[in-house]
Length: 228
Ligand SMILES: N[C@@H](CCC(=O)N[C@@H](CS)C(=O)NCC(=O)O)C(=O)O
Image 1 (cartoon, rainbow, N blue to C red):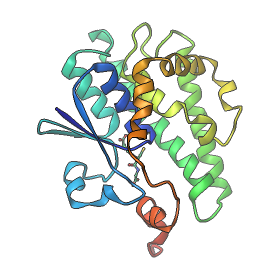
Image 2 (cartoon, rainbow, N blue to C red):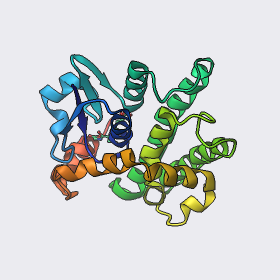
Image 3 (cartoon, helix red, strand yellow):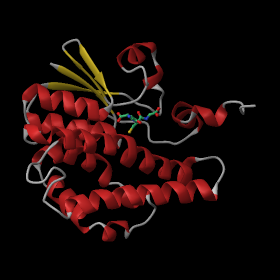
Image 4 (cartoon, rainbow, N blue to C red):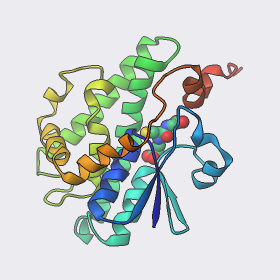
């Protein structure tokens, strides 16, 4: 039995999609990050980075969403491209993990949550997020999926973030620039596994308010003293 530590955010969502696609038996354990449940000693023993997602697969603990996708895909031998494309698979997985996700996340942070409006930070992350999504779009213009013909964990990693692009870029028309990504998101959204993954959050009432408690748990640096 796999314990899946999650909330409704993009990184857990991709793992939720994999678990639902795979049919693996799992138990979804909510971690309410606005309440600070990621900062308990117990959870830090599972994920030293105090973030979701993480899994505990009968004693094998894995954290970081794309590491989990790769671990689970290799465990069951599914949602992977042909073996001779492993190099490309790793490149795209890392590209999503180190580029698409962080730039998109920082675009949201500096536009919506930073205590000061810093025009250059907003501009830089908006620009970089759009540039990364354009690379995904260009890749998808060559074939139905990120790895070409096969639906793989790279598509799941992209899907976890892509549904939020209009919010992340504060631009309702943002998807107009990404017709092939729009196609992929629509296709995956229609999969029963995706519907179930998106519904996982509804079984638990997560704290909704972005009050001071939430801000302290999510963005502790706001309350830290300034560096010298
Ligand atoms: N590199 C990590 C990032 C995980 C991450 O940033 N998770 C967010 C939700 S998408 C989180 O736990 N935020 C709560 C916090 O920062 O305290 C991964 O891919 O899993």
